[in-house]
Image (cartoon, rainbow, N blue to C red):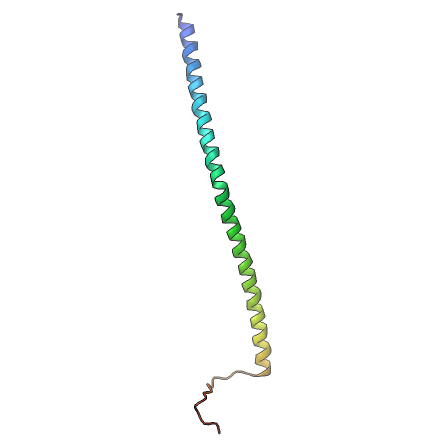
Length: 89
């Protein structure tokens, strides 16, 4: 076998092994990214739900503040505590 054919055969084998390893690496990385897809989707949906809950809580807080202002104008609050067992004058 001549030197040129040995070099060609060796480089062909190295290219084949390199291609095989490269394809296996790409398949593993694609498989891992596919596995991470549902996990990322769940995180995104959870963040969106949290955002919805925050919006609902903010709306409820505003509503409670408006009610407090409304009722404070009708019946002002004071620091006096009224108890049932005390005699009323």
